[in-house]
Image (cartoon, rainbow, N blue to C red; front, side, top):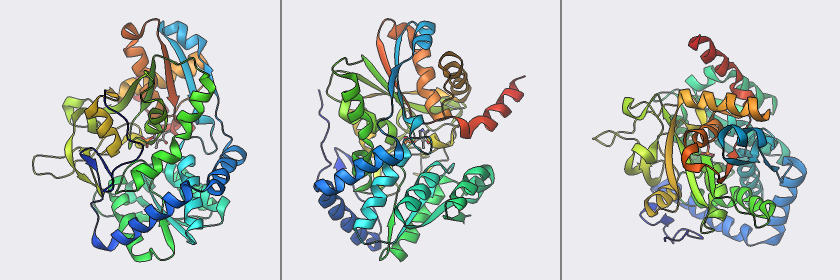
Length: 394
Ligand SMILES: *Cc1c(COP(=O)(O)O)cnc(C)c1O
């Protein structure tokens, strides 16, 4: 049995994945961030402040509770971890607060971030307002059109939303642009990346901030461990936040990727299930690319899973067997939303619905077992889109 790595090696690698593949101009900033994070994370004053804010402002610990009607419907004993109840409606705020605090400690007055659907943008804008930092969010022009409500949220919170028109004008291009912007403003800004992706130390640092999810779960379970723990995987931060503390406990870990319109159509976001090793946004990982190594566009009904790569630690977990990865398509995710809504009164985010519906699809294999689902976020943001799909299906 392979072991989880408490931290990546000196080059930032998790086995053959990870590392720091960044332009020379970015290397000093990455090294400075790594040093500052290591110092901060070893300082009880910083760690206490992080936990105080999670408690008072974010509303942690988020509940963990049984789902009796869903359990009965599936013949599986289901438990839910309610990240949807964290302030701003998803797990992303944990990381935004952690990195915002780090930025302040480093003496930076500004933060920048990328966003796809706007969820990480809203979390970062919220953390910046709370901590008194100036904030700029890079967002693809196409996404700005599609996600008007989140753009407005960020602006109300005092954040400047910068449109990115290069490439397809979506998340991948926004990440590239935010990294370029960081190079030129590194003196006074910190880059808050939104998932366990990017060059070292980001995948490690974001996992450390998100592992509060799994730490709380272990405390809440009080020794009564489930058989299986399931989470959706986009970049992989909610899943790794849950997986890392649970790894090596004997619980089977299952990551659910977006099969989009179907793996065989090529229109999906399943970087582990259907990707190959390559370098994306400064890290070596599993990713979607063509035979010439050109990054391919990802596709998913859920914007949060619409990314052509995955955190390098997940690539490590996948290739070493520490976790299993599966994929669920758009149509099924919609079914997952209604299933959780109608049995438990919780409208999950489309992302989280991938994890929910996988449990139904695997119900025969899971019969009689206890399965913990990470409900990474709430579905309010997706209601309009879900409505459109319901119309189309009529
Ligand atoms: C952004 C998002 C995700 C995907 O990001 P990860 O880094 O894979 O967790 C999943 N669920 C919700 C609700 C999100 O907002």
